[in-house]
Image (cartoon, rainbow, N blue to C red):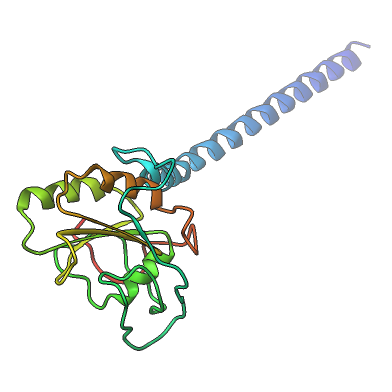
Amino acid sequence: MGSKKAASDRAARVAAMQAEQARKDRRWKIGIGIAAAIPVLAVVIALILPLAMGLRSTSAAPATGPIDGVQTFTGLSANHVSTPVTYAQNPPVGGDHTGHWQNCGIYDEPITPIEPAVHSLEHGAVWITYDPSLSGDDVGKLRSLVRGKPYAMLSPMEGLPSPIVASAWGLQLTVDTAADERLGTFLATYMQGPQTPERGAACFGGVGKPSL
């Protein structure tokens, strides 16, 4: 009887140890899984959070009604072409364009050719252009306005109808100074705004190397 009881006790202890080891193994695997997921999660947050914040993170709130001075253009074509396009507006607000889009960001030199920038407008970008003779103070304000916005472009351009022009697909605003509050409102309203033909399409991974 004693030997049978001892064997039974050993079997119970072995079973208990095996169960405990199984629990430890499960905890270990869960810990490894969490540890492996943390870097991935950090990368995802690092990529998505600035994007989500940048879409609407301007000093101004989106407009709840028409923005004074904004011109609207309709009937814009959106074909992909491989030849230069002559646009009715300068800068353009839409129309045929190349199959490659312009990377959003701040450019210190004029964007050429401009067809990729028009493609970015189709993706929901706002393109702010300014006369090359604009004061350094105004250019600095524009750079601060655009910096960190994943769907905004800034570049100098010759032959503008005013010192500063903000363009989105089918929409355009002309102003005289970077202090004009309508610029921030335009940016907040039309980056990935309701006018966007291809909302959510990328504004990176295209052509061009912005300085910021």
